[in-house]
Length: 113
Image (cartoon, rainbow, N blue to C red):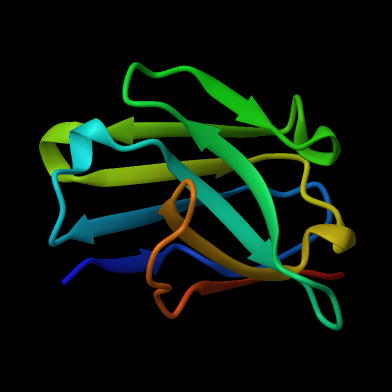
């Protein structure tokens, strides 16, 4: 059974940084395109960033230049470095394959002064 366990969220002031991590299990991690998604309050879940098995990355326009997705295949882990955070980045962040399979619990990111 595929599982994702996200961590690293928290409360941060505008302009601050956070690094999210996600450990995957029950899958051959290295062959999949991985992604981070987020769901803000009252909003639909949206795709934030993707990284292919070969390391090619893509981002939604709203996070380009601020967020960086990376992966560590030896540890079945995908990361999201988030810099220059803004209140509109407040959301529950989830990792998954792209396209997605089963969802984990996510990790809450709150950007507020």
